[in-house]
Length: 150
Image (cartoon, rainbow, N blue to C red; front, side, top):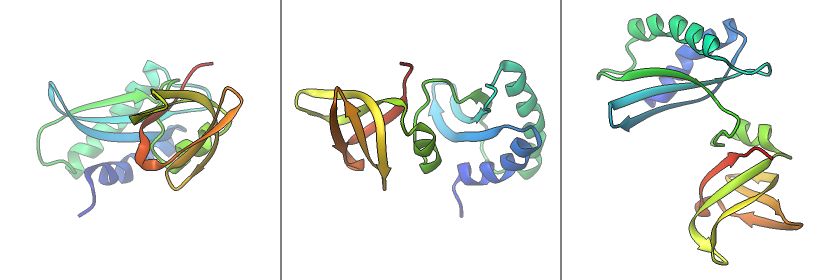
């Protein structure tokens, strides 16, 4: 059986195409309020609250009918945001040449946080230009990688 996020993505993709937005990410996570299904959308023109509301109104009845999640959950639609987390290959392609922040699981040279230009991404490993030096991180070292505002 496919993951819940994969099933939701299959249902949300036609809605995204119809509304001329792209799906950035989908997460199904446990939070203080219980389980939350969060769909992140993006657009070259930017995403506003009206876009999120329209997307939510279009996708909600489709989710109700398909019932991809048997348990109760809270459904949210959000903009991917300016300082978005990079998780998928398409995210890394979007971020090439942009300023990013890498958070490491374990410190390297006394630091768990590196900021620099994303130069390369390959199989989960990344290379950043940090202060004139190219620094390579293996996938296993990276706790999170996100685009940051200059």
